Length: 111
Length: 114
Image (cartoon, rainbow over all chains, first blue to last red; front, side, top):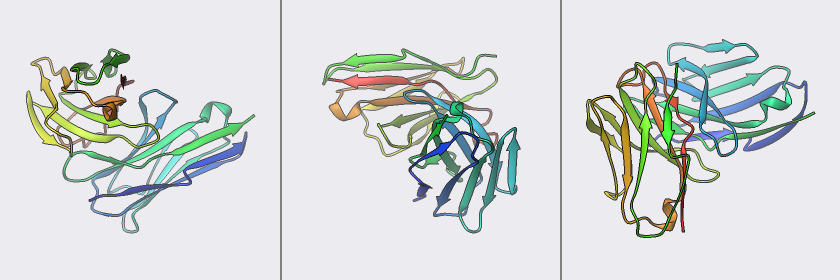
C-alpha cells in the first residue's frame, strides 16, 4: 500500500520568506505526482503535475522537484505572500489509476 | 471553460437517510472519480467511472454506489447514512482513464450527518 507523508504538518512564515514543503512516498513505482492547494472547506486546485520521467516542474513562483528513487518531492514557493496561506496536498498516482494523498502541509504566511 | 462542478455545496442529513451528490466533469474529460475527505485528512479514493461503468473501487462499503451518464456526468449515492459519513466529498475528472494528464477537482459537497 502506497503511503504518502508530508512534513511539516503545519508551519508559519513571515511574508517574503521562501516556503519549502516536503512529501515522501513509500513506493517509488509511481507514474506521476501532483501538488494541490486547498483553502479551508474548499476543493482542490491543481498547482503542478510532475511525470515520473521528469525531475522538476515550474510555474511562476512555484517549483516542484521529484526524486523518484528516494521517494521524495519538494514544493518550493518563492517570496511567500499572505495569499499563499492554505493547505498544500501532495498526491501520487500508481498503476492503479487512483491518487494516494498525504494529509497536507498547512501554511500560514504572516504579513 | 467550466471546470468540475458539484452540487449541492452543502447538505445536512439525518442518520439512516440516503443522499445523492452530483458532478459534471471538466469539458473534454470522460473519466470521473470520487473521493471522501474527513476533517484534517487527505482525500480517500471511493471509486472511478469510465464509459458508464465502475472501473475501480476503494475500501468503501456497498452503501456507497455511483453512476455515470452518457454525458460523462456522475452521481454518488450513499445509503443508510452514518455519523462517520460526514465529510467533504470531492469529484475529480481526468482527460484519460489512466490519469496521465493529472486530475481536476471540483469544489466539493460538504455532507453533515446528524
